[in-house]
Length: 330
Image (cartoon, rainbow, N blue to C red; front, side, top):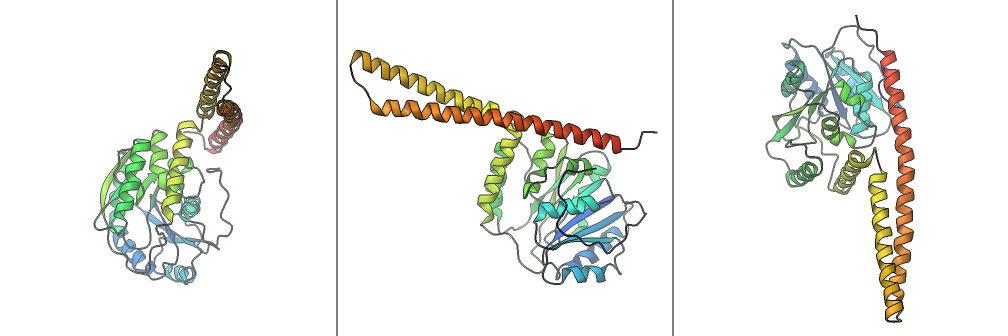
């Protein structure tokens, strides 16, 4: 039992699992990429042909409506390293990576898109430091013109400021050990923060430059409307890393500060009442507001602590199940 995540609603597997060992599994989420897949797989074949390590490519058809699924079944005849899975409806990159990870047979995984903005010839460069035991995760940073460069710079600057992970590009092609995906939360869009979560768990992260090319065909699936979602996800990850284990630290402190503000306001109100015989209604409103909000924050923190305890027990249960499923060391 490697992850604790719901499986996709629908998957088809038309390729039997080979008994041949695999060193690297390339996970390729694909949504309406029928125009790109033939060339992408041909470039993969050229790249893998003379490599000493053995590769497999797992293309996850994420609800495509352009015939990608039928095309993949035909391409299997000429590309034996190809395997594929299918989501009946679009579920996003995070779920596609999860599906590919569950089907992967190697301990080194690579996230690589099918749109040919990155060329498969760079995959061996991504996995080389991991194969050499020099790093647990390798991410590429874009070299070339990028139409969303301004937004990407802001996103990466905010991420570095919040998480103190010193890489140039947090959301790009990457290679990583399977253990990192084992610990990755199954949350929509959190694949963007895989580097942050891996670094927080003690895995080593390095980066290499990766050339960026114009799309071969099709169009981007992400527009400017993703910016607010990305910011909210960033705050969610920050909260998880800072206070996910002890939520009372945040909510308890906020509650205590509000209680203190209400207490000080009460002293001021009593002083004015007894010395000046003046009652200030706004001060009493502040007192009531602070006491009510302080109580709500404190109760929220206590509830969060109970949830954190349950999550810790669940993680420990998973760890024991994983250890029990592993074969004994020889």
